[in-house]
Length: 448
Image (cartoon, rainbow, N blue to C red; front, side, top):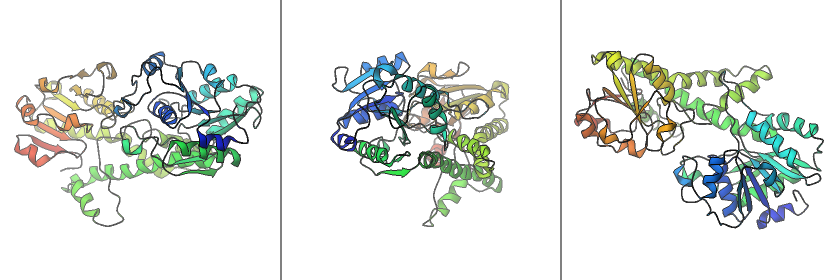
């Protein structure tokens, strides 16, 4: 049915059918959220494995918060399929939550957005005025530049067959306090009536503020700079973590002292920044700035700092082994955690991978332990440790991801099984004094 004059009221009543294209870390919780809010939901994913798991009520993502909230296979108002065409014919609103990665040369990869849009538009019923909303992170202008040519090529008419809008996802995997039902949303589109209708729709989904912000590009820009800002803030403390140890000063002591001032924003350095947002989104903004001939110097510099942080840490670890008298060709390092974020089984853009690669280039053997990942989630050249209590014979342990399972291991027992009980805290979350008393030689990011 799509847009009708009573759309806003239908949204408030939950009397709409919502389609979600892409059932990943964002799409699946979004689909579940709309279902819980009372809407009829169609979920689509091109992966048969994902669709079959969701149909069985199983969680195909690495986010444990999704484990117990997937509707049962016989749930009403819940339809899961690999067929976009089948879903589109039933939907008033279609939300696109597909990946927006970067290519190997760090350029925006809009393949998934283009493919999803094309498939949706090909399946639309003429005159349905179906609303298609992009939620994936993009730079300002992508929604219109990518989708409008497809609409025109297929002979569809805006305002008659289809409406296009942008409402960026702000879901934070592994953070139950900021799930799809607890975060504020912004809606951008050229038609304010459509904007008001989508505000009513998303207001049923989340308990937080939902507002119409005007043109598409405003909403697109708002999303991308949210993660650009975080990347810049993290880059600052990571750069300080390189500088202060050379001055024989612990960066954590400095940050804690600075944080006594009311307007200082406290961030913590680490081995690197991972995930599908912060290490990716700045490249989208950098590309758009380049398109219009404006240098994104600060954004570019920050990204360079964070991107090279694993290489910096690898150099520090190599020095530690050298000082301990361990030859590179004989050294064995155990990485605690591989996924990019604590308590989430997601290895995308993890800093563990470039860290491991840099160490392996120095002929250092690398093993990794991560209870949130399957053995097949690791690169083939990484020895996977499935039982941390059996780990032995290592020269250095590096905390990469602050999973509780990594923080609460039997540190005293592991120390006794080490060739050299050397520990590097790559997240600055461990009780270093306690561990030192248990026989560990302590090192940490940003520590002299």
